[in-house]
Image (cartoon, rainbow over all chains, first blue to last red; front, side, top):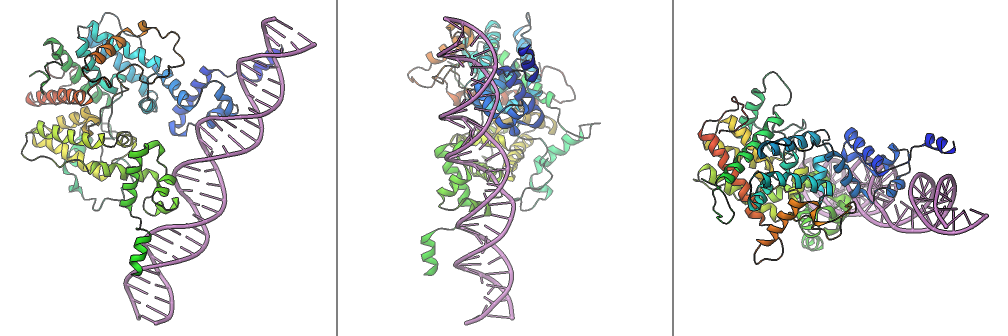
Length: 236
Length: 236
DNA sequence: CACAGTAGGTGTACGCCGTACACCCGTCAA
DNA sequence: TTGACGGGTGTACGGCGTACACCTACTGTG
């Protein structure tokens, strides 16, 4: 009964509870607004209490990434390597899209957590069992890069200036200043069709690039590519 | 003479001087150690003096990226589109490699500066004059993503644990835990040949991926690819 | 030459951050 | 009964970005 009263008064902190609260907070208010103090407040606890469950903020971020990664579907058995990799990557993408801050945080980590390593291991395994040499697998993993996690490294939005306030240093904002950007932006806005808002179908762009790479990989695999023949052209 | 005495006492601050000092400081001590206070100290000036030349820290970072971008070589005239893009991208890569913080900073910007836009415009122009439709150019630019700036979005180092201290949450660090990662890391360490240190030739990995993409682009261009035929396979 | 305007450097202060360190209290094993 | 210990608390420190009021030395104008 004494226990019950206490349990009612406050569910005890856990590393897991801390991480989930952090994810929820970042989802809701953005990663830049996530501070140890705000997180503590959310959990109705004093800031220093968190440090009994995570060593520091870095480790908190590590843990948050792990939470997101746990949402990635397990590998589909029985698919050929291309579909297997494709499916896993797109599942990772779904997970990361659900937490817009996660890509940025992942990329700020300096070394992978075991959870991330396990994911990479499974992807590497798909290439290996799909008939890729260790050598080719190695380079192919590099070529995938962050796309392996479903993260497109887009530079900015496609539109030249999504931010309404003009850049200060632009001397003359004339339309002809960046003709090719203007042309491209115009076309994108045009063929967006019925939807008025965002011009780019991010999912299409991602799959376009992903498949371009995967098809390239398959071509190299078929012709027994090896880094020993280091010529400029990757096969023809 | 009065001017001279003053000039000796202190060269006046400029936006340019501020930016250069910031770049030098970031080069020397890392981007995370760059603060308005430290930068001011470096310039022998009070922190708030900087705000007469840059609006805030965000704009300082924008300006720093512009400084790096100014080191990119101008486009080589007369080359075919593939060599032109390749050369420009590799030059950008050289610039960014000289300032390890720059890639991360660029990717943290929310909207491009005119300098960045100008660079993108020139790359887009290379595709357009190389015979790419606006449509294909659009998707191809997405597929290049940050690689357009010479930035590989590697996730981590290839070695499974470059950081000497072991991750805390690893229950059993046994060799068999991530067999594929282990296999790959072993092979990489092996074929590094004479060099004992870093196992991966980053430049090779970058060009491998870049050429894989550029060759893919060329294939699509030749067959007159259009996003109208949205099928999974990008040509064969 | 006098003077007002202004560009640019200064000083102080505020509210935020991460976290070190000492503390304290309830639980449970011996 | 006691003593160790897991876990929440309170205080404090040094650092951050930057708002705001101020001062000062130079400028162009009459």
